[in-house]
Image 1: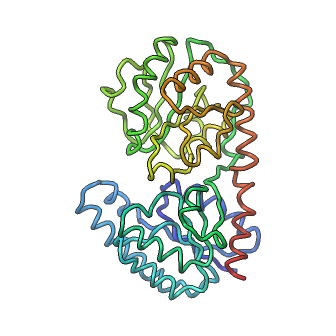
Image 2 (image 1 turned 60 degrees about the vertical axis):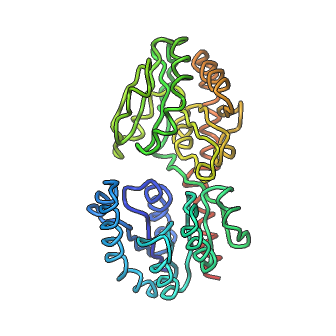
Image 3 (image 1 turned 45 degrees about the vertical axis):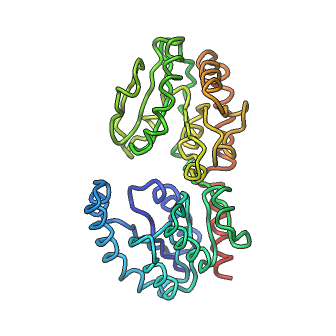
Length: 349
């Protein structure tokens, strides 16, 4: 069997973790795989520029690059479509062409890409014409509203790569590190914690907030905190997280955040780090409260759970061990790959 993968872009986490780890496993299982990324590197840079003109140029460039690939889709037994192809929110021009050209279509989405009237119209059309659907969490699967052809597959990590250090270390109160990683657009989910983190820092004066991101934070919005900024690099993202003691993921409860798939939690936990997270979206499925981390509903809860973890090295180790076990069992490439193969077989049936 020959499968074509249309991804959101080579450097995008959705492609790096929801597609690329499966390619060698599929090839070892006898599949031939062709991977096409949505953005050439220069198109990605244009799109990331944030300006309307840049975004439109990037979309046009993406459409020009993608069109020949769409027209060639009939050469494959199955097409795996990740989120949307370049173009307008409505109509889904390239997706319609892809459906007509393809034998079978598997649609994968891991964000609330349906928000907005035009976006939702396109989303519904793609859901309806797809043979199988892969949703990144249970909320997204419910939104797809096609249970007979929808499978929840979380965004996994390769636990042979994401693994905790073989050396057990017990941090001292003067070297405790709270870790946060994301893209710069998600600083809006860190800054609301500033006052609570400052209270934590008052109790642990030498605690460090380690931020791993593509752009530095606005330190004026994180006053009174000992911030260590580390530029994100794909080549050493595991090492960048190895020395944190606790990982955090705050989210407000909104229609958009309910579609988040909790990947930063999966990263932290794969490294045997306990976590504190908001009880929103996929976080509820990843964190077993009091077992592998804590779910903090209020800022008082955030303070309580962070100080509890920072104050007790044995508790951090115990919850971290359970966190790693959770990832290996449910959120690893090894655990998720059979689900993807089943989806492919159903699409071809």
